[in-house]
Image (cartoon, rainbow, N blue to C red; front, side):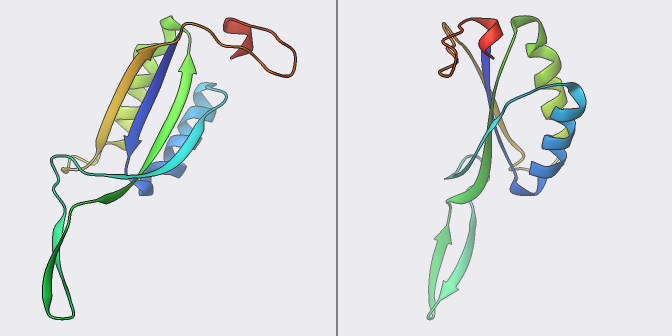
Length: 112
């Protein structure tokens, strides 16, 4: 199993949720996050002083999928979240050693 973390624009959240449901990807965690990357933010003025705003609001979606669904899930996220502009986000894929469903104690892929 793999954990896929996608950091995307907040405006893409609804489209991604719909795409996940349509693709049969069940269970996701959504977090509001802040950060910066290549986009580097923009300049604003506050009380006459220039302020560089380089911490941007983003959404992080986390899903755990079987190994054979990783490529299709990453492709789905890219196709849905891509605008072609700087700041579209990043996707991180990492291994998951164990999953346990707390309610039943079930573990492994059946717990996902």
